[in-house]
Structures are given as C-alpha cells and as structure tokens.
Length: 154
Image (cartoon, rainbow, N blue to C red; front, top):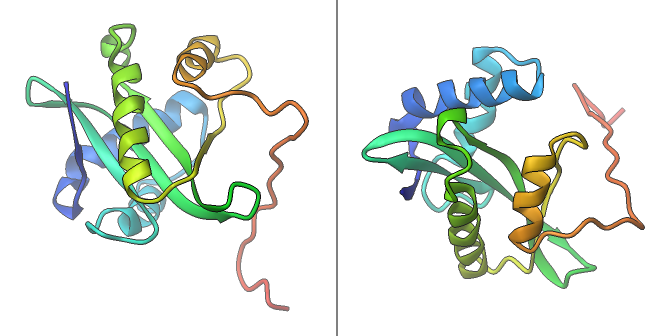
C-alpha cells in the first residue's frame, strides 16, 4: 500500500472515487460540484489542505482529504479529515489504519495540533477504525452545521 499527494493531473482518478464515496454516504452532488470542491486541495503546497490517493499495486483504491483550519482551544492549526474512502474490496485489510497513521504524521509536519472527523452514527466499522487510531468522541460537544450559500454579507 502506498499513499501519495494527489495533484491536478490525478483528477480523472480521484473524482470517480469521490463520486463513489458520495454515493456510499448518500451525499447529493454533481460531477461539476465535486470537481470544483476538490480542485483547491490539489496544488502541492496549498494552504487549504491536501488529498492523498491510496494505491495498491499501482491501482488507486481510495483517497483521504485533509482540510486545514485553526483552533484557539487546541492552540493552533487543526484539520478535518473531511473525506476518507477505500473501495469495498480493499477494506478490512489494515489499509485504513496505515493510511490514518501516515496522514497523522503528515499533519504533524504541517503544524496541525488536532485532527477532527465526523462519522455516520451507524458506521460501526469506521468508528472502530477511528477509535483504534486515537480518535475519541467528544460527548460534551455536538458538531452542528449551517450551510452558507450565495452572498452572506447582507
């Protein structure tokens, strides 16, 4: 198994994986929406985040996207594991654990102090994976979202 930072040249490989993940999670998006959302993460050295392709025997079997932020609570840069997908045929082989460990090391090298993620409540396999990788539920807090569209400046 190998992971490598995805670039614009990898769009034709990455975007079908993003589509598969969105279908798996029931996320409604179009090909154009996905391409537009992923593009800012692809230039090497971008301040927005990174996407890594996960490969096995030269074939892409998944991806993981890390998006940067900042946290006063955690004392510096933080990041969200925004999306993490491995094709079904490759799951259950320890690949997810290896990818998370590699990305955690990369995140430290980027100055990230805390990693966050969200997982579907009923996805018990993913919850076990994340727990074994050191992620813990923050029961006192609940992630809530306000989707902003259009001009929000009033």
